[in-house]
Image 1 (spheres, rainbow, N blue to C red):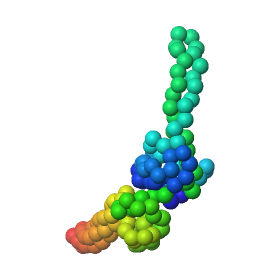
Image 2: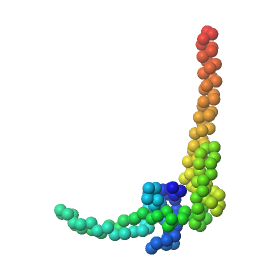
Image 3: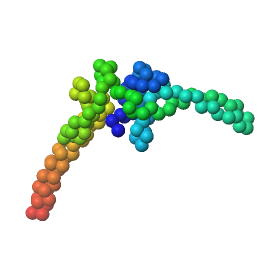
Image 4: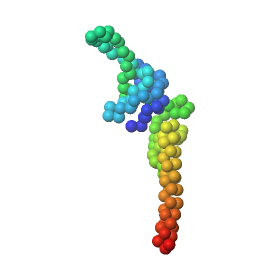
Length: 137
């Protein structure tokens, strides 16, 4: 699924058409997302015991076909993928820029790869040298 929690989206169809919100939940099996403050419905709860009945407003899932991700310029866009050495990153199709959280994750993964490469190269050489000295002495 191309949408992630925290993405800013625009509702393109339904009773909330034209409104913007943030994705709070992603439901890949249903191919749907829950958007903060959108697609609100009232759920009636029956009274039981000493508790009074009430009406609760709930957000229902929206199909992903009814939402569009917003790029850094605030325009509706599509999501694409680019494969790099650090991994796969999400990009906006119109602008080609990396999508926010994915950029942070890819940078963090790249740093981890660099650190592990540096650590594995230096200690391996030093370990061989120290072992050979200890055997000779």
